[in-house]
Image (cartoon, rainbow, N blue to C red):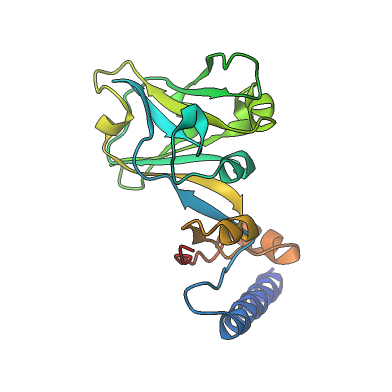
Amino acid sequence: MKKILALIMVLILSLSMTAIALAADEDEDEDEDEAPLSEYVSVPLGAFTWVNNDNQKGWRADGADDVKTDLPWAILKASIGIILVVDRNPEGADISLVFQGDGVDDWPWLQETFKTADYYTANADGNGGRFVIPFSAHPSWGAIRGGSTGKFIIGYYGDGSGDITNLGLRGASLYGVPRTLADELGVASTGVVTFIGLAALVLAASGTGAVVVTRKLKKK
């Protein structure tokens, strides 16, 4: 058993060093501010650009409702979902995701409500945490992303705290955006170095996880 564990550790170290070397080689060939380090990135959303009421706030893609925003529609429709980082834990309230877009006639109100327990993870110290909501969990996402523009809001209710900002919202970002697309459109983003294939399986089995590296991409 000890020999097997030792072999696994050697393999992990070897794969880790290979990944680091590949990232270093890429850094040497790319401009320091522009070198992307991963296949997929997260795109910060910034300030709300669609406020429906006190409990429902979110973001428009550029051009939705003829409003100019910094969020290209291509980025929104290519993303996997949204991450919301908050400073205090929700107290059992549901959270909802509402889409509108021209992918569905007459821009109907497409709302889906989720149990916070299914999409929220508290920090290790118990103070705050994050919601990770994949857009695929919303039954109308396919129709919305098939359109040419759209918008969405986060609805949060029920525990007396008001909207999502009253949980101490520290940041919101779209995740799973193709790095090449973010780079092409000049959207500020963060990258994650991931291990693929056998390396990913070995690291997952060992419980060591992946190495995370963050970098701002230059705004074009």
